Image 1: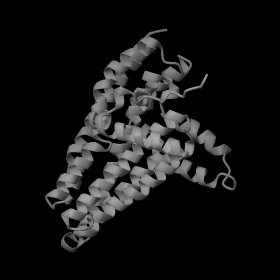
Image 2 (image 1 turned 90 degrees about the vertical axis):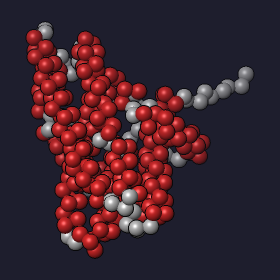
Image 3 (image 1 turned 135 degrees about the vertical axis):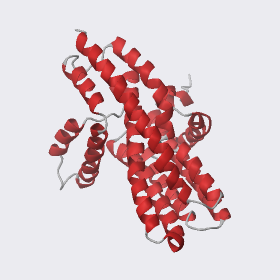
Length: 305
């Protein structure tokens, strides 16, 4: 009898419906799923797809240097292509089980490379009019951009931790990362250790902006032996779920829509203004709300045996 291989469905390649945005579910994930199937047939690894997305995203950024709307639109299409690859690499990794620490590092690096290119292109485009001030404005905006993206990623992984457990989340804990770091050799693991250096700092930054969550997790690690009770997981998901829309807005789609609009009206500096105002307000609200939730749960965890 001939053995048939069942093709994985699209839902099996998603992190969770809780953490997926409307545009991702209906646009990027279906496209990424088809790319994942295609690359899987060719034997292409998820990491190779990520590297390709980096080059495509940088090419997109370069296109935003020009004042030609036609070239800008080409850049927009390239950025959409890059993000479809960014979706595909994760979907392929979940489809095949080929998840690696390097993949996690590359995935985080990809978006940074895209936006560094985008920021630099916009600054070069506006330098004749703005001078050095546009670079200063961009540097400040970039700082807040990094915080927005980092906390959105952090809260999404917190949600996944209590929804799906450790296997379904990429939430990191800096003390554990530091212990692993000590075991790595600069001679044998130079690339991994270099990236791990940055990743530890990235994680410490996330933890510093979530002190009440850290207190809550300390109770779970000590009093509950690192296993959150079922009642807590259900209750936390219910409180955390409404915040997922903010994590998505702070990640890619909302900021890219703002970027595209600013380019269409030939006022790319408005993109920086949008990040500094609208997205920072979202970030502040999300942090305050999440910390308030953690405070309430900390008291409840402490009161139960």
